[in-house]
Image 1 (spheres, helix red, strand yellow):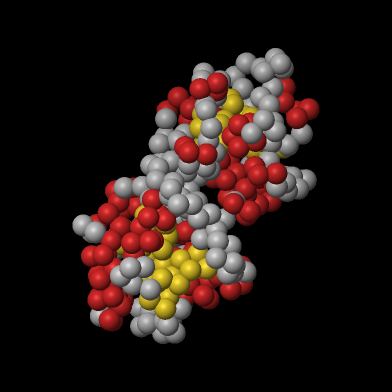
Image 2 (cartoon, rainbow, N blue to C red):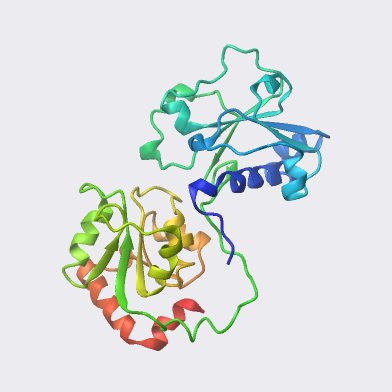
Length: 301
């Protein structure tokens, strides 16, 4: 499996998807024809997401992705010649960056609104009405979809199915830092621990895991709680793509509707909380599943 999942290293994943869209064309015919007519396209990143910047020296589009005739820059002085200008929403909403509405906007220049946050953290977007030409987000209906992760087929190394029970010592585990009583996931967690034990890690209970310890720790768990802090359409983060799938635990998900998960994740690779009439019933199901090696291993096929 290959995936790009964590915000800290997500920038080049974002830009690679965006640049590939510009290079290969978009589904919408009018946009596709527009980009085909451009021999060279300059993409200006107006503000770096989350304040983390990277060097753009050289021809990064070609050097990193073998995409010709595309130039990625972050010098605002190139605004007049940029074909696309990308704005990251977090900094705009927080007032740390402003749109260049005082500058003459070149004819044909596209402004792209980018966000990886759920609607609960995007702020009031009404003031941006009729300003942007395209959207970039995790949502599948965005002009450019930037998922937190994806699964790609690779040649298997060893028999993963036979190894699925090895070194499993914990029934359920959860890594959480942002623990809020009003979150739906907190309510489900409180009900779940009344039925089954859940081992919790993270800053919330002062048991943080280093990057080196994260996946090995999860690998010792039968089930991992990939509970999102916001329940929003298509909002499926690294909790599924990295923590659960790469950690090698069967995933228990709470987030958007099950149909959103089925649209992007393999069949029978997760358990959705909404599939059960009660959390107590869910807990009992997890206990039975952990004891049934054959049924448990089916999640790794």
